[in-house]
Amino acid sequence: MSKGQKFILEGKDEFRRTSYLPNGDQTGNAIDDECEAEFTVVSVNGAGYVLEMEFKRMFRLSINPGGRFRHDHPNLIGSKIRMRLSKDGVLSGFEELDDLPEMTSIIRRTAAAEYIHRAATIFPKLPEKPVGIGGTWTYTLNAARPYIFLDVDEEIKTVYTYTVVEETKMNGLNCLKIEMTYKQEARVEGERRGQPFSENIEGRGKEILYFAFEQGMFISRKGTFEMTAEAGRAIREDEVSYEITAKIKY
Image (tube, rainbow, N blue to C red; front, side, top):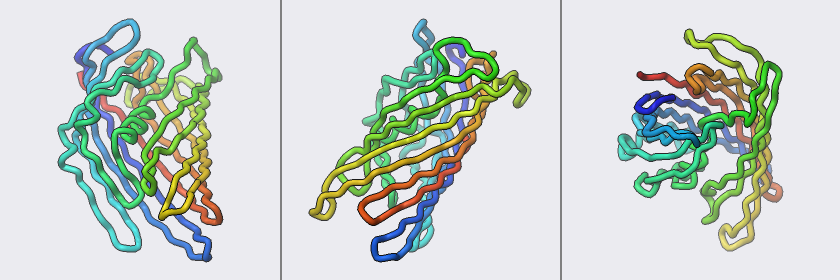
């Protein structure tokens, strides 16, 4: 990537939750998200890049026993944040997050910590040393995001394993096809309705991504994630399918 280059990321995810209550009842809800953001390479140095991200489009469709609700978040459109992207794909140094609006749905609250958590997983972590076909590397990400039911953050540990599958083409670009698997663990503790509350969370995911090595960026990511959370005798199961595509602008 070079200074002044622009690219657009389009993301979609489908979130499905089933909850099994201690009394034997079962309930569920769903969220469909779509978003579009434009990235501009502000500067380039030996350590990596400074990027500016501008929200172009975002909506959320929430489906629960009470009905279907669409949230377009017009106050988010046009908002910008800056971040640093290292040569190996790690984002840090988020700026101007305090100017972003907080958004709440029935099971998610999007505040500064959640923006950071979601942004930090946009770009794949590249290996520290060159690898060939069949080469693997791992990366551990420790992060925090707001827990909607408690006034605390949920501490999350995710371990990613990447494997280079083959060299191929996508959208006319020379790419490496990479398979990524990951395991996620989290625990949250606090007080809910005046009573101590804790929840243990475990999840696993799998993803295929295409990295355009001549352009130095990924152009496609598609994956699934399954998670189980236990809080006493209550259990919930989440399933997420997602896709992120990049369109390079010159």
